[in-house]
Every structure is written in C-alpha cells, then in structure tokens.
Length: 154
Ligand SMILES: CC(C)(COP(=O)(O)OP(=O)(O)OC[C@H]1O[C@@H](n2cnc3c(N)ncnc32)[C@H](O)[C@@H]1OP(=O)(O)O)[C@@H](O)C(=O)NCCC(=O)NCCS
Image (cartoon, rainbow, N blue to C red; front, side):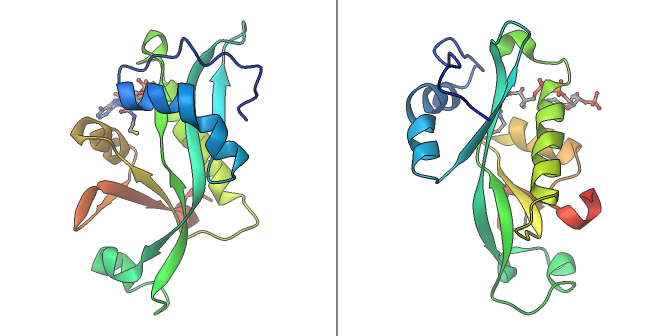
C-alpha cells in the first residue's frame, strides 16, 4: 500500500500521464477512497512500480456474448478496475509488470466483496497487448478495456 513516506517524485515509466498522476494526484484519490494504490519497493525503498484498484461494474451487454451467457441476467455485474499499472523504466523487462498484475488479481480474487472480473484500462495498443499476453479479453466495443474473470484466477 502506498505510504506518504514513499518518495514518488523520481518515478518515471515513460508515459507522462501515468507519471503525473502518480506524482500529483494519487494521494488525493486515496484520501477520497476513489482509488487504492499499491507499490513495489526496492530494498532501498525506491518505488519500482505501482498500480491502482477501485470498484467498478460492467454492463452485461458490454461483455462478449460467450461470457455474458454464463452470467445471471442482471443489467450489470460487479468488477474491480485496475485503473493504472506502471513500472519505472529502470525496472522494465524483469517480470515486475507481470508480478504486479498477479498481485492485483490475487487481491481482487481474495476480497470478501464479490467481483466477477478484474477490468483494466489499457492506455494504448502496446499496453493492451501486454494484458492480452496475460489472458485478458478485450470488450468487443472498446478493445482498450480488457477483463479477466476472477473465478479462473482462484
Ligand atoms: C506494460 C508494463 C507494465 C510491463 O511491465 P514490465 O515489468 O516491463 O513487463 P514484464 O517484464 O513483467 O513482462 C511480463 C511478460 O509480458 C510480456 N510483455 C511485456 N510488455 C508487453 C507488451 N507490450 N505486449 C506484449 N507482451 C508484453 C513480456 O514479454 C513478458 O512475457 P513472458 O512472461 O512470457 O516472458 C510496463 O512496460 C510499463 O509500465 N509500461 C508503461 C505504462 C503502461 O503502458 N501501463 C499499462 C497500461 S495502464
């Protein structure tokens, strides 16, 4: 969990909006309970990566028909949204992104509050490819929003 003693000022993932959000806005979102933020720290307490989680819901009509037909006929189903995931450029390509994703999935899957899936908002095609590589499925009408059912994770 992000702590106010963690120094966020030097964080650089290479995507300016993700860096700016982390430096300037995330603590307000945490305070207002619109996002929770989790960080990966090095031995020297440097922040190597972060992700955010919040409650969400997905309208049933937005899901692929194959998925929707296995769900109850509610207008929408509950989900957990990973709004942001970023790894500092100094730590890329070492498995940290995958580890943070696994941590987010495990956290969402063991929550006492039920959620059908982890939803992610990819910031572009490259990020979407990262999630697809890990088994996420894009929503038919908005392929940069992807989901992974949590029942399979458990
Ligand atoms: C996307 C990101 C989180 C990946 O983190 P990372 O630590 O470099 O990735 P990892 O080393 O954990 O890679 C894990 C696996 O994903 C694969 N992968 C990494 N980036 C990929 C991409 N863009 N497309 C497809 N696969 C990708 C790796 O090849 C690796 O595969 P393997 O386990 O089969 O060997 C990181 O590059 C990043 O912070 N990018 C900028 C911010 C961003 O795009 N965030 C996501 C959207 S909000």
